[in-house]
Image (cartoon, rainbow, N blue to C red; front, side):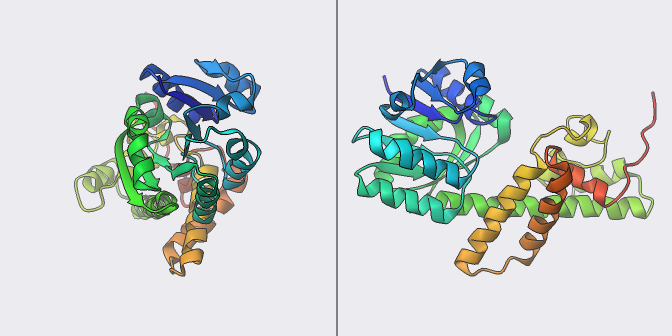
Length: 294
């Protein structure tokens, strides 16, 4: 049985590790947080070295610096010579490429494999994976990816998974701004926002963000706006992802003016409302309409 060491048992990592365990893998988890370790349903490593001796080591951590620290302090020093390293964190492209290069220098295979789908997708095993790295490593990782995701795309060389994630996230951020500004304009001109939503959902303005993050309370019952803007996907995470997209744009020399404005706006909003759903940004554009009491 393949043993998987899973480092990072937070909002995304915990459910992903549980899905792997339920799929029949021998999973041992590790997290710096005692609460996260206690909340994990599977075996927890008594030490980081126990995780490092797994056949496959998956990391799901907040930022590139955390991934680099784990790899420097643990993985490359203690990992088995034939271990496969999979980083599912969303980090900057340059760090992903550097880590893959250093892993290869030690004879270890590594993939950058950030995800999309949120906590619900992590728990259901329906994540989308954007993967960068060698063909052989990608083939070895197929059973692991297939257990956790429903859409797995191999983009090519190391770092290309993070490049795809940065580009994808920038589209999401810009689309979110467009949805919120569109509703603000419709409201300012006195339109019925329920009818406006129905129009947009069946016309050219339709998008995942529109249908899942409509910013008007009561229009979409399951949307965060209808639930006190509980995340969902927190503003601080949206801001972080958009800053990573801007770093990728700067590194590649590509102008992204709308992406830059979205990153600036969400970063500023995160300073005061970082733990609310990103759709709460609407409240900076327009007062929420009064709700009819039943």
